[in-house]
Image 1 (cartoon, rainbow, N blue to C red):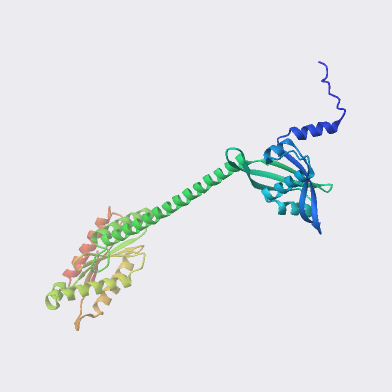
Image 2 (image 1 turned 60 degrees about the horizontal axis):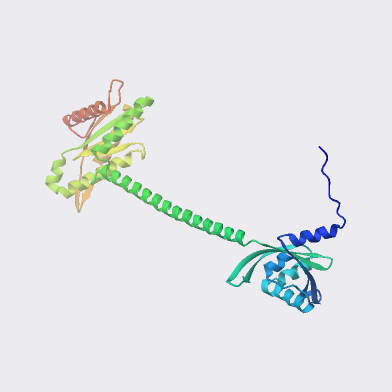
Length: 342
């Protein structure tokens, strides 16, 4: 295959001029006119390719007056006097985007032009490209991004509202669970809640082979309090004994409950028999030595207590509970106001 032959160009300048004339980029050359101290007063059009004239709807500048008018039209219509002044002062290429309102026979069109000005040998070479469609696309993208951001913000607001509602419901459910598991008079765990907690603690103690003890407490001759002082006094006694029991218990470790009437229970995790007996004796003494006042009436109360500790043969928590209850029965049958271990 023979090598490709090349066309010999006799006049390279004519090729450049042809390329400038045919390009779709609008090109114009202006002579800056200065007023004083390099302050730009205006420009004079020296050359414009067909693309420039078509874009600007310019006439063929055959006369100086037409050239002057066309240059003035170029600066004022595009509002680029300051841009050209800055380009000349910096003496380097500068670019900007301008909006040009072009009138035709039917309607006025708003064009967005990307304009570059470059000082070369005392002249200003201006190139312009119509980027209207790109600008519209960009604006549409900006609008879409704005809508997406609004949607994201809206979704965030909805999500925050949902999270707040879920949290509020969880708090309400937790509050309802606490209310459902709390004795309304004493503020202690009610029978069901106490037994649930005690069963879970029993399983934990079995799993880790930890000691566990149970104290059952029954107020002595509580019926006499109601009969002699009234049921309001009886309620005051229940509340006072509840507070005493809680004051001696380890917060967050022991579980104190009211099993019904004047009967109470204290679960002592990680506590063996001797520790449980010591706790029960302190509790008995404090109840005996704490006078309870209802209005101006002074009420003295005592309690009988039964203690049991977890044994290897205990198959469930009920076994431990029954032994503590049996020990309580022994304490009551043995004269009351004593601690009995089972």
